[in-house]
Image (tube, rainbow, N blue to C red; front, side):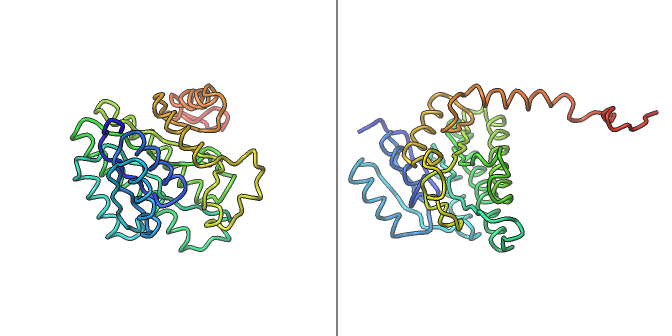
Length: 266
C-alpha cells in the first residue's frame, strides 16, 4: 500500500473525470470522500476502489445545486482536518446558443460551475491554510480561452474558473497551499450527451479518454504546473499566452485614453 496522504474529496465523482481522479488518487495513497448525486454509482465505485486499493472510501450523496447539500459539503471541507486535497470537478455544460438556452438551464449551470465551485474552494482553502498544506484542483475547460467553441454561458463559467484559480493560487502561494487548474479539451465522458450533443460527431483525433486526461493532469500537477492543458504539445505556447497577457498589464488602467481614439485632453 502506498504512503497515506490524507483524504481527497472529489466532486462529480460517480463517473467520467471525477471517477478516474478517485481511482488515481487512491492508487497514490489518498483515502477518498466521493461526492455526487447518484448514490448507486457512488457506492459501486467506492466498493470497487476499496477492493482494489484497500483505501478508506466514503460517499456523500449531494446535489451541489441544492443550498443545503452545498452547505453540508462545504462544512465538511472546512472542518475535516483529514482532508488534504480537493478535486472541484462537478460541472455541467451546454452546446446550444444563448438564444436557444432556457433561463433555468443557464441558472443551473452558473450555480454549479461557478457558485458551488467557489464555495467549496473557499471552504477547503480555509482548512488548508490553517494546516499549512493542501491542494485544490479546479477543472475548467479549453473553452475558457476559446469562448466561441460552445455555449457562451458555459465558456464564461469556465473562464471564471481559470481566472479564479489563478487568483487563488497567487493568494495562497505563500501559505503552503497549491492551486492547480486543468483545461480539458473534448473528452469521452457523458458531458456531450448531457449537453445535447454527440461526441461521435467529433474527429477521433480531438477526443481524449478520461484516463489519459487525468493521468496527464496529475503529471502536470507533479511537475509544478499552475495550468495544465493536457493536449497542448508545447508548454511554451501557454507561457507565450501568459506573457502576452502580462505585457498588457502596465497599460490596462491609465489616466488618459489611447491616442487612437482621438479624444482631446486638456
